[in-house]
Image 1 (cartoon, rainbow, N blue to C red):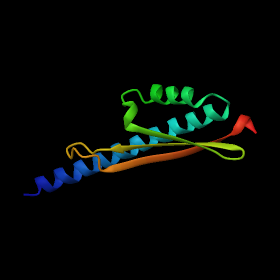
Image 2: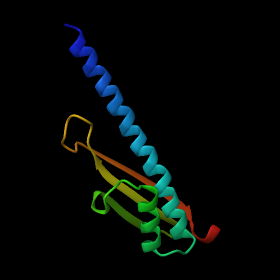
Image 3: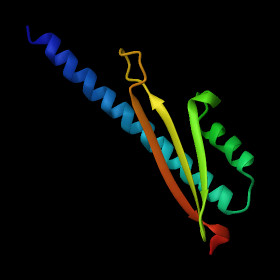
Length: 104
């Protein structure tokens, strides 16, 4: 009788870990994209870098936005995430990282 409840708890725990892993990937990639644009590279080159770092992802599954402030460039990456077994994409995972322009 307790086996289904234990299986559900394990599934939720593993899903939460996979969600956190996806978020950490977005942290690293958005920081790399922000640094690339801050160095003076084009946003298209930064986009190519993003999809190179996130290899198994479709280009329409990821939303990329750049915000140019006075001395910093911020890159926001967001995507929808589905937990295994649920099918629907229930969670929006987003991360914003900023880098100083031209090393100022």
